[in-house]
Length: 358
Image 1 (tube, one colour):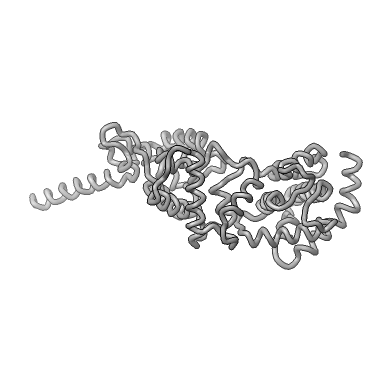
Image 2 (image 1 turned 90 degrees about the vertical axis):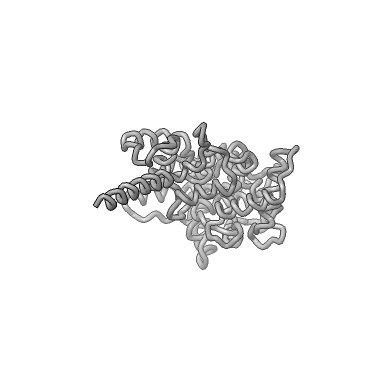
């Protein structure tokens, strides 16, 4: 009996010791100072993969609770585990944490937001571009075309490595990054942003790696035609007509249509964008020059605003919202639906309203 009791005690000690090691964040703290060490790209990915247990690209719900508990309790080397964080403390901690790091206020933590909290290698941190997002999607499309060297509509690992090399060189002109580090960064960025795990980045995935400051078309002014002013249209035209030649063309047009497509489709590739562009241009490029002038842009924005208002009214009445942009982005009825929009809203009603108000 005595021997059995000793065995039980030993087992309990072993379990307690094992529980201490189960705090995942504790391994990344300095043994003496208890401060977090600078994480390498691979270590940062380990942390992300550990807490994003379901692999949906967010740390949320119980995952977020677990991370916060272990993040706090890992400070104490002798702490038995995250259960030492009370529910009251957790609630206060989560409120402060989300206020500080949940930039888009969606109640979840994305990998870019976590990168603001954890100390990382300076070069790797630069790749998240917190302080230097692109001015518009026009710049994004220029970069996309530059690094999609084989024009296959994807950024593969070699093209991504070239992009990261140039990005770091631009950020730190006096310091070269070793080839091994570049490979490590490339592999990590693919793990982070390659959501469909095909070993390359499609357009929407690259857009998350290389964000723009704002999709201007998401503003509330485009949810009702009565709110849209001549100044709004001028502002949008200036945003995309970067060379000030009076038309939106080439990368300017790609950037505008990318922002337009993002309103209805979050997961898209270069083929989706091309099909969407074909549909839009078929219905709105009246002079068939392959460009968008101010009058044609006005018609598109008025249609967007008009249907934004109708969708809100339908939703308020309990009806399913019918977004024409979502329909024209699908195969089969793109051109037909857009032609209906043009005839019904632009010719009969919308243009008359515009002339009287703008």
